[in-house]
Length: 429
Image (cartoon, rainbow, N blue to C red):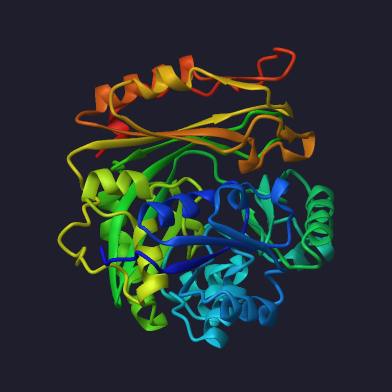
């Protein structure tokens, strides 16, 4: 890791999760400067930053001026798909490093665009339908249910499972209204197992760093599935490496992806990994903490170093990336139903469980979730990450976490949603 002492990092967002970047920058010796349009009381990252400023992050010239006025050395965009193209524009105008180009970010923040791209490279995707089929009342060949999602949405927002033509049209209209007329993706709804692939790019070299099972469940009738755990390495890794990975690498090379972190989510369909989502950014599930334990490098730290020096770490990770790690890693999500968070209980007990390395609160006390948030990643109130030497220990710890961690409302109502128990050691490679 390069010496970052005295460097000044601008973090484009004041959200709760952006506070992760603030803490990491401070831990690395840099000055953390946070900017967005929210007042400090509504911007958790600003509350712990070394400096903070109010500016619209969509006003590129204003952000560039702030960079000049405050002697900023680098910029981090973090976890927001929406901000990535603006981040690239800001870095270009300010003469600072951007790990991707505006065109690359636009490609990987639009589902229609990157799914079309995947198909061009022979990367399996979920069968889809044109919305015209439904508007023209020509859906006799459609296999229901289908899933409708906004092309530029994230965090599971705007996603609806539909069982007939009328539901599809209503869901498409709702997505268009919510996401300002953006197009929608309509896919066959595949139930069953999921997985996520994680890459780190370093100076034009593309390293598969992890391949995880994504265990999902629905907490309400007709709701969209959200994850309750990730486990890695996944037993589906050999099939992914055999059928899909080489095509992914060819695509990365031909797109000239040089630096950064990218993930792809997919459904397991007859043993085939079918991609349905991607992100050219840090993950909200924060697997970089697990990678630190499994492989000895932290992609969040690497992105901060890139922002401030133009290099994705002075260490070469080629020999460290271990998607087939002998250890077993897990990431448990504790979800809650609509209500106001009063207290978190059991976090200290969870921290003492074997292998637990990190507890990440997704919300703070006083945060209110509404019915509109059902089926969204906003329902996840806590993520607990850990590493074990064997599958049995990992599964026991996951079960214990699910038993001891609870979230209560101010009047004592239990908001915690109980997730399924993982029993099968065969989920691991």
